[in-house]
Image (cartoon, rainbow, N blue to C red; front, side, top):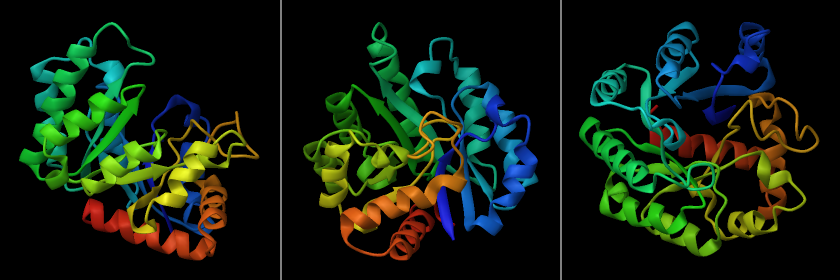
Length: 254
C-alpha cells in the first residue's frame, strides 16, 4: 500500500467529490495519507479529516507564504493541534523566496520558531523551500533538524543540497515533478539518493504527474511517481512502494 506523505485534501478543489474520492483510495492501493496544514484556516479542516477518516493523519504548521499576519495566539492553536493523537508532524514550514521576496527575515523567524516547536513537541518537520536553498540548509542546521527529523517536501534542488540534507538524516519528498520531461536535475538527485531516504508525496491538488500534468492531482496518481523512481533506480515499482512506505512509517512514528 502506498503512503502519500503530503496532501491537501481540504482544498476547495476537492469540494465536489472529497468523500467519494477518499473512500476510493484503499481499493486503489493507497493505505495512508498525511493532510498538511498551510494556513490557519486549514487547521480545523485538517483536524476534521483526521477524525473522519482512519487512514488520514495531520501535520500542523504555517506555510511561509501565509505568515504575514501570524500571531503568537495563532501559534498556540497550532501547538495544541500538534498534541492531537493523529498529528504526526509540524508542517508545512520553511522559506519561499520565489513568491515572497520582501519578507525574508519574517519568514526565517517563523521557520525557526516552528522548528523549535517541533523539537519541543517531539515531532518531525515537513519543510517547504523554494529559491531559498542556502538559508534553508543553514536554518536546518542551526535548528537541530538532524535530531528532530523531517522531510524536504517537493525537493527541487541540486545533488549538493540533497547531500547536505541527507547528511543531516533528513528525507526527500518526491512527487509528480519527477515524471516531467524537464526534470533531469531531479532525476539525477533521485538516482544519487538512497531509497531509504525517499518519500512519496502528491502535494495534491497540485503537481499532477504525467500524463495528467495540469489537472487536479490526487493520491490515485502516485503509481506514476513510483514507476518513474523505479525506472531511475533500476528496481521494481513494488520495491519503491514498500520501502518508501516503511520510510514514512519510521519518520512519522506510525
